[in-house]
Amino acid sequence: MTDANAEIQQTVDDNNVVLFMKGTASMPQCGFSSKVAGILNYMGVPFKDVNVLENDAIRQGIKDFSEWPTIPQLYVKGEFVGGCDIITEMTLSGELDKMLDDGGVDYNKEAAEKIREANS
Figure 1 (cartoon, rainbow, N blue to C red):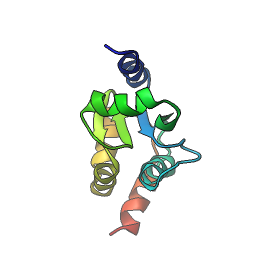
Figure 2: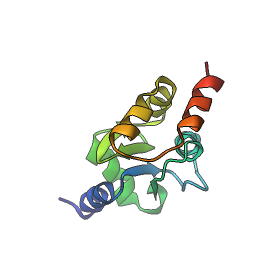
Figure 3: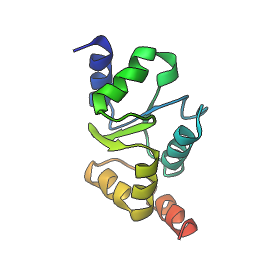
């Protein structure tokens, strides 16, 4: 296992929700990362943000780790969930709520409903 792989695994293991993204939750550096961080922030989901732009080994390593070619990447309770399009669809369908509920992750259910209402 590479150092980057071990670091990624440790981060995923140590945090209920992890977003590997370009930039940070408070200052995203791309539109897709901004959208996913915005969804999580709006819903009040506590999450660890990992800025892949700070470390090239992590930037490539996360793609190899998940076998997914794009960033951002969301993990919930150690499980790879997907990127921006998948997270958006799961938010609108309520699947993300179920995943968070099943994992015992606190979030604002009213905010999740508001997202769906605004997009229906």
